[in-house]
Image 1 (cartoon, rainbow, N blue to C red):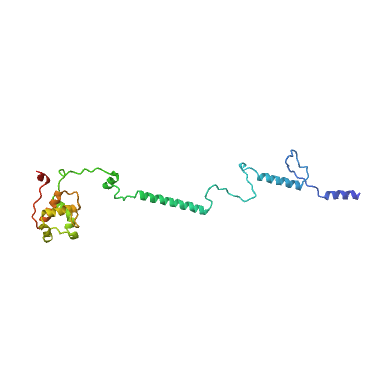
Image 2: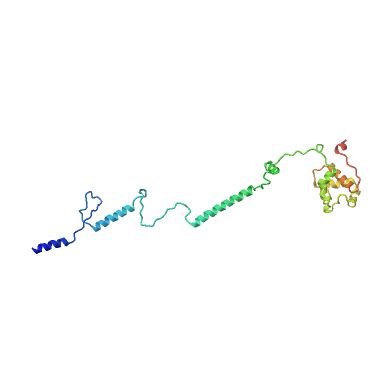
Length: 232
């Protein structure tokens, strides 16, 4: 009677196989009655990991054994490229600024609204100027011609010109007579240009200036007749 009891106790103390409730692919019924198989379980886990790793991106999953990599579609990928782009932008802005200032120079605030400056900007390239004829314009007197043209040299004796009112300096020229002095004044001599450098003067106006200068320097020439009186 002792032997059966020992057998029962030994049977009760022995470890019993552990059973797991594990759902396996393709198992429509309860698979908890199947014994645990480590090799089979590893295969299932490997298949599960491989399936998760290949889930399409459009389902919101992405698993990879490689480190995360950020895909950048831009052309600036390094600090050197960024510096090059910024430098090119600065050079472009400076070039445009210089070109604008060269083509259209900025006007000063004081001259921007000056009537003469405005007229010069809107004036055409060429314009017609009507010059009055000899009979239409008012002829200048000898004094007016001297002050506007002759005084630039004869008031200070520039280039050896005899000074206005100096009798001793003008005496040799007065001695040659009015006609000779008028010829020199009309055509020029040495440093003196023709008509004193003012070609708009008429011969009559130059003659008036010669008489005015000579008579104020010791001569006593008569005033030449006006062109209309000479024609009569």
